[in-house]
Length: 149
Image (tube, rainbow, N blue to C red; front, side):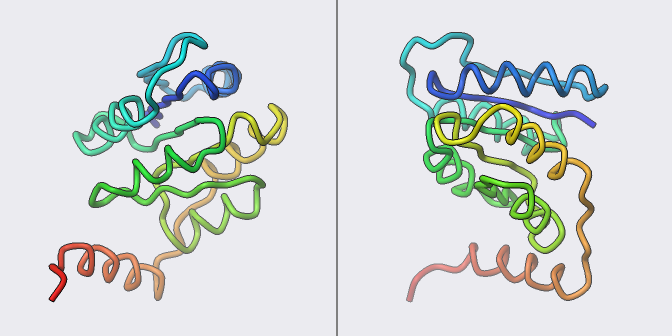
């Protein structure tokens, strides 16, 4: 599985820890930056990751900023992207099982390395249940294409 990962300056250290974990677990990791703690604009890095998913160059994404909020907002602006901001493993599990989330957003200033790794493990190992949830995912896509009346 190919995982694209991105962060801003506030998520840089957590990105590096998660990247090491993913490498050790045998995932193919595509790191689109940032590559230091120098201040950057998170939307640019969120977009770089989303672009890889939309082009089929990555299967899932992990986006990290200070709170995870900004990255999740950026990601969810794009059709076919379902980003979930998670602070513990249960949310990550439900995001995959019921929402078929394909992007995980994390807050580098809010959660520790150990918790982040557990969230990532859960996110990547949980399958989408389909069934009634698939109908709802399809409805989200349909509604996102409507124009306000």
